[in-house]
Image (cartoon, rainbow, N blue to C red; front, side, top):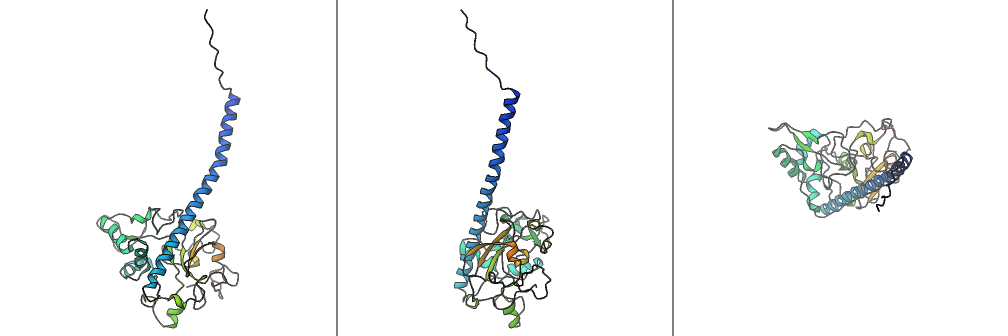
Length: 285
């Protein structure tokens, strides 16, 4: 006698819709969590990078009469002059933490007529993995080579451009003074004085209504005007005692009078939490 096989029961449309709805709900719950985990990991990596810069900077100062590395001429067009100076920060500090001087990195890429590797290397000490570069290529300077590529540079971490201002002015020295850099012993409040900071990689890290939104980001040194806002609306700062801290962008860009207007006539961006110029008021350059 033949036995009938029990027929398999198919999903109804209602059951299928319920299943799809549950899956969509779970994805909706999980995705923000995964995004938060990624953001936290990137922020941790960024802090680690700045700590490496702190270790390297203080180590370099320790064998150079306590002088800090030279911050360099600020315009991108002067980068060829900066890279020619051994005391320039991007040349001096990296070897202290097992990295190559940037002049070698930039020259090698130019010879090969390609972008500097660090532009896309999230493991590089020069790069923050959360950074979204404003331009598709690194910043160029000088004349193009045979393949049409100029010599390049790109940094997410840069020295504080205000640090030496009063010292140079009082000594009647020009900006091009690699042998006249600040000494660590001259910094009274090392736990509050900014040595390096995370710079914005894209102007849209800030709302377009922000007074600092439009600042040119093609720089290799900076102050509060180009401070990052990609890590929970803030960024990381490395202080003269070597420690690294997260700082809210709005806090870093508010002066001692509680004003965020970059044209404020009495603006001094030295505050009770952040010191940009340890020897005098920090004003807009």
